[in-house]
Amino acid sequence: MARRLKVALVHELLTQLGGGERILVEFSRMFPDAKIYTMIHDPDKIGNAIDPARVITSPLQSMPFSQQLYKWYVPVMDWAIEQFQLPDDLDLVLSDASAFAKGVRAPKGVPHLCYLHTPTRYLWSVQESYVREQPIPALIRPFVKPGLQRLKRWDYIAAQRPHAYVANSTNVAEQLQRYYDRSAEAVIFPFVDTSLFQTSTKVDDYYFILTRLEPYKRVDLVVDACIQLGARLKVAGSGTLLEELRVRYADQPTIEFLGRVTDEALPDLYANARAFIFPQEEDAGITPLESMAAGRPVLAYGKGGALQSVVPGVTGEFFEEQSVDSIAAALTKYDWTSYTSKAIQAHVAQFDVTEFRDKMHTVIETVRDRWHFQHNQPVKG
Image (cartoon, one colour):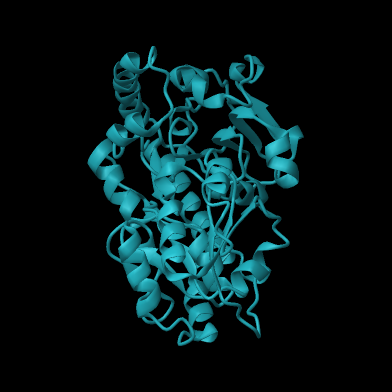
């Protein structure tokens, strides 16, 4: 029987349970003995998804209010990720990164594979809008751009450290080349565990959104479009805008903000909806896959990772502009009863977690074999 690989998993922050964390959870299942290195860990937000005994944190963990106000520590996260001293006897460092995790220093002689969610968005693709939209105090605002430029220089250097990359979408593979001058070993889209979802015999008359409630998610556009049409909308998820949106739309009886919902409640919310709406531009996007796993179509903004998962006329449709009118027009244009659950679920099967796991193991074997060949080392394990 082959020896289990000794792997270190590296993840930026365990302060919320989103798409990136679900990837980490799967990596932790693939390598059940692996320690998880993360800069800040908030067990209350992660729950039992990650065993706290496996987590090793950076010096930021002990800083004042770091678990609650972690965004204020961004200026020193480049330093923090470099403080980890990983064991010398590892077979592989496996990071998943949307910002700092790729900058971890792997021990000499150990290959580092990075699963890239995105190049650091607020340094490269959306820096201007990020600075404009963040609630930054006036006294600090003049120092933000110079600080981001410093981090941008570090980010490029850090992006050269992994020996190989897996991109989570063709969109991210292109950005990896554009911003970091690196090529992806493979493109492996995020997964959905199709076994957790089922179709419903009775579809209700509401539309559904599940997302973190942050400005760039553009949930307000969908809410306004549904109000314009008099359509019911259920919005699941928490975030910095949750209370603000609840207050703003308190007098709208067709709009319901559910807050954070349990994993047990999600399948029915997907399965009973007319359609799932995905208004933001994401580099990949897991929630459209979950809707498809429940047999329901998706209306998505026609940019980014949704182009790789949504098939017009089969699993959903696209709208062209991030505007109330464009979303409202698409909601009325398409007959959401015409999509068949069987066809939708047949399509999403290629994104099942078992496919993801098999593809990742193949890439890991390829990267390790090439590494040891190039360094004239016998392959362990």
